[in-house]
Length: 265
Length: 240
Image (cartoon, rainbow over all chains, first blue to last red; front, side):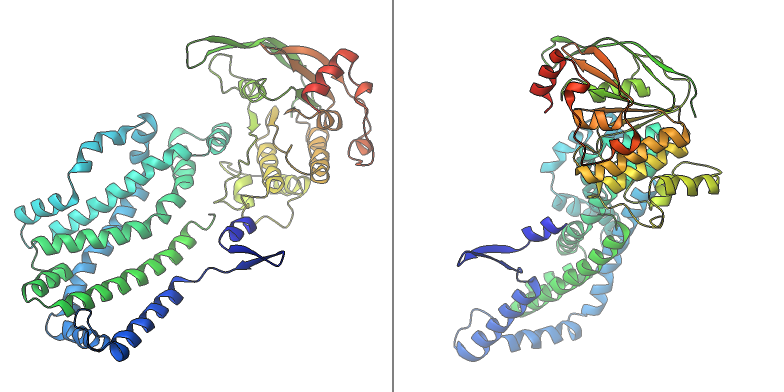
């Protein structure tokens, strides 16, 4: 643990001494960049018209709530994203054995999904939008399958790293095959699956926004489309900032929750 | 508790490498494991100690399964980090005798740590859990695969003492494997020296030392007291 912490520090030599510096946090970097942006474009370089001024963005952000009905759109999008993650996790937790068995018995089974690598989720979004226009349920199905496939890929990759000593021990301690799947193999894979949730959550936002952008008349992706139609550049920027902040906040919560759920890693 | 001698008879094993070349790993390995004693398999790395232990433990389909339970402790920590010490020890156990459980926890030195979760880095701590978990299963034999060789001598001496108590107090024989001569001498009642390819039993040594002397770090045991000239040259090249 101590060694890992050391690697997180930047060490350099100075007068024959090792000096260990703490890495600068993302929050500090973000605050620094925002300050630079405000000072530069609000007070110093006021004549330029390409990059929007901070005050205009704040103004545009307020108009998102009044003119674009951001609150409704926010609930519509999050009503897809969070349940999709939750259902996918529950599906994995309750059927771990069913999902794991093919991965362990047929090495490389995920290769059957290789042809779909070139069939981007963008086409799946188009197809579902075409077949089920403006359906929140179809969007939820799309999001659920997106998360499930991402998590299954992580489970499949992680099966190579199952500790042999755990499997051997459980065998000698008299565990049946089914018990071994649920009590040992799934438990040893869980940290990797749960730690990947942050990445999957971020990717899901992109996927759902694209889904809503290409055809749906609901959600935050739809706001993007309307803003594009009205040529409202400021709304696009301020909505982007809002979504980034939401993703950042949820990722922070996920980090805390996963660290409690897989406390042993 | 096993009061009978466990006979390991005529273990041989062949395997084919990736090129299809057939290799004989063991040839007719035969020895006895005496009750309430620690028997150590001493061999250089790469001589198939782990495979041999797993075969004796009954994991290999080629040989007859033992009639009674044998517990194998792998070389890497095998206690489950998602379970507490107590949950690890009583893992897959029904109707645990509380008095017996307490005495086992005391024996392995985990008293007061029942609610702790095993840290991945603490090999000695996790080894104690594996020992307790093995004892509570009441096996006829515990097989330990070079699990503590990486620890400092001080920590190893503590664990040698615990292992010797397991054999004397609980009556469970231990089959240990190592490539360290000093470890084999300090820990064992009997050493089975395995060498050559295919691996075979070269010699068997009975070690008679007081328990206090075994765990005294000031005493340096002379190899020549236990091994003949030919064996010493073999050991000094490969093991020291």
